[in-house]
Each structure stands twice: as structure tokens, then as C-alpha cells.
Amino acid sequence: MVTATLNGKPAMELTTHVVVTAQTTEDLNGVSLQAHENHKTIWWSQPLTLGPDPTRRLSTSHSIDYTAIEWPEAGALVLLGQVQAGALSVISGETLATFSLDFMGKESLEQAGLDVAADGQLLLITSTKRLWVVDRNLKPLLKYEPRFMFAGLPRIDGDIVVIDDWEQIEK
Image 1 (cartoon, helix red, strand yellow):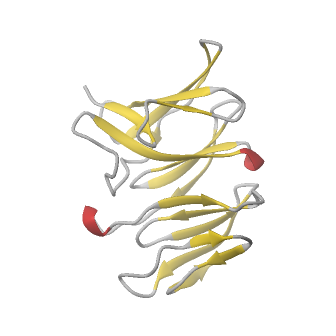
Image 2 (image 1 turned 180 degrees about the horizontal axis):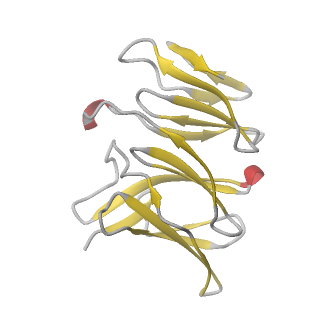
């Protein structure tokens, strides 16, 4: 049996003290989340077809790991997979938004990440060949692709979004 983990752990506690667990779909390409409060289930999400984290940093032969980040200012839990990233409501588990991703297919060269600005106003969703800059309403502000195969990993440094060797492809 293959289990699902969030950031390498079997459960993730949100700032509201709700505990979220993940379960893979039968085909192993999707994940459903379940939220628990005081040992009671408060919601189940619909399955999201994300595919496992392409870097396989924390996946094992027995588990598929998803990079996850809580974004309190957006009321969302964001998960990163191979096909797309998905944002779920922390209150209901409803899918709020998805963002398509693109990778190379070579685990050792992949980069993937989620980064929320210190003020909570922006989220960077990074894959090897795609970068989304998203506002707290989960609306894409910018979309970039790298200029070169080994472009630097985009990041948020204080109030500045640092995007080396990437070019905007659409707004």
C-alpha cells in the first residue's frame, strides 16, 4: 500500500489547529485531503490530479510526498505535484484554484517550490519550466518560463520577488 505524506510527514497541523492528512487515489496520480479537528473529520476534499512531487525529495517506495504550504491570508492550503499545483479552502476542502506545471522528466534536475511573501500577499509556485506569481485572491498575476535550462530558483527575499533568467509569457 502506498501512503501520502505532506512535507514528509503523515499529517500537517494548520494555524487553526486543524490537522490535515492525505490519501492517494488508486492510480497514484491524485490525492484527497481530510481535515480533522478534535479527532473528528470536518471535511474531505475531492481528489486533485497532481502527480507526486517530481523531485521525489521525500517520497519513498512506500509513500508519495506532496510539498504543501498553508497560506492563511488566502484561506488556502496549497499542494505542489507534478502536473499541477492545487489550492484548497482550509475551511471546506473545496478546490479554489489549480495551476498547471511543467517539468523536464529528470528527477535530478527538477526544481519545485512554494513560497509565500512575508506579508502574505503573494505566492510563488515554481516548477522547472513554469513559474506562477499568484495574489491572495488566488488570481495569477504573472506567468514565467525560464530563458535557460538552468535558470535560478525564483524566491521571495523580503518584499522583493527575485526571478533570475526567467521571462514573462503572459499576464
